[in-house]
Image 1 (tube, rainbow, N blue to C red):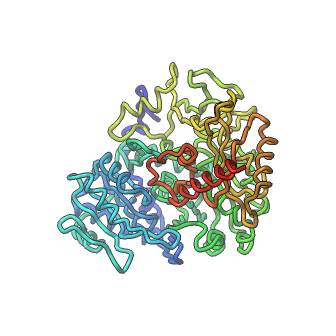
Image 2: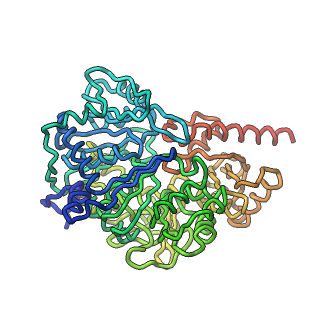
Image 3: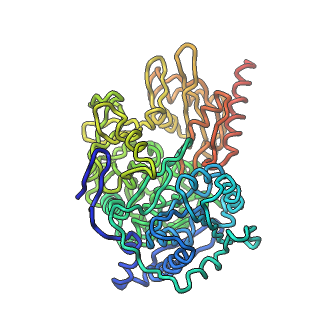
Length: 598
């Protein structure tokens, strides 16, 4: 099935395919043109439904327009757009003609966008004039203009989808409105480009990148087979599904499980643009009832966000269509799992955690719901899925039997990125040559495997708090805080301490109906001590209304660390709400002032 030469590998060598053809043309040819393929909803109440036939028609128009602008097989196209039908159709149109799309999350700033345009060598950038988030307008075109001033030459055209009455300022000779872009497709072919299985379909910067971006490559063949197979094995994707992944197309989850895998499976995929709790926390549950959603893929952070409002918003709506809920992004802490599993879904359907990365393309560890659901162990990501060979090693390469170490993947699998765009040496060095004497994929995540083969993650290997020579994972401490009924979310980091080396500094979000107090602060310290023992020394508990998180739902612990160390947080262009940084800083200073006055 594959050929490996050192750290380089190729799947289905010599096979010819096309990701777009199998996602759309195949279903239309089978007589399913009238089935809903894409349901788009946004926080302003707009809704659009595209059937497989209609989506294919739009993709063909865009494919012709791309060719009309001179985009050919192998050219890179940067998409800086929100999760909307036009962006999804463009992704499909790019792979249809053999162009390589590079989607940049529409929450990044100009510097991060410029880095990604430069790294990809894109000749075309497609954007929209604005996007909307929690009722606010975010001007994307202005950010593109600023970014391209940092990347002179290279980009030949900028296409702008105008979504507001104001439109956007266009640079003559370079920029085109959407209608002008479509007009370039007149007389151009929209036929599918045959692609060898190992040719790139897209490139995507790994999430959380703060230095020079690493662009993971995903191919037409291996990626397609991998996400489709694991989508069936792990999520049970089937044509009858109304599948809603609450992610954004700027992340790999959006690529794999908003766009490609659901369409490969022939089901209806839901794309949502906006915040899950806007205009109010009933939004996701109303969508489940109205769209008759059968499967949800969301993040643990989203679960904890909704938990803050309690279960009452969910209980107003009919949730009987749901068959399963799956989570990934960070560890689904047992208290959050129990709230969703028992209080919201009333133990009627399973809530399943799983683990993967941008580089893996799809799940590696999970509960194989689509084959046979195994017992759920709250807090565990599950077991290695079929074809996945994992191990846990020390940084020196020693096996960790029943103890925490670094999770490694012992051999490639189809959806694993085979290289980094333009940097094969970096790929080898960063992923396959990190542990001496072992040619294994280095995940960078700390984990351990129990006696039943279940994998338990403790966060990134470098996100460990060392207290008096004892190492405690941030996830363990955050889970302990969540044991208290007043806590909705917690983010913790290590703070330097002269006596113990480090102590725990916590930032806690309370559920509605609970107020900060010295008594509650002490109760939370007591909960952590009870759960983790006296080694878990809590230096302070800071109360905030929100944590600094990326738009993909990951807690930005480095930002919390910069707050307690009074340092510049660095690049925060991926942050959900910049106000969370100032709030954390104000909470930290307020508590320090209180402690100093005692």
